[in-house]
Length: 102
Image (cartoon, rainbow, N blue to C red):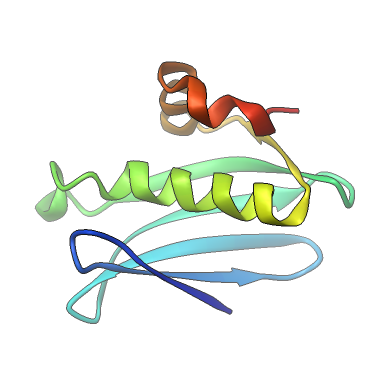
């Protein structure tokens, strides 16, 4: 499990196994969202869902989850296939996130 801290004092936890993984975001110890992925071989993963509780909309948490996934891919030499509509749109709008696209 990996931990990330971000500017909004939220914490992102990462859980991963050989089949799938999840990035979860917590605010004050309460889980408020997640981004899930499935491994496609050993060198890439498919982002299949990103969601944040409605009560926490507008804080940028969903984007932070996508960025955490991109950072993980970069650090580990992996590629990303964004099938989740939110992740796909976020990566398409931000050129600096596109280097890990499969």
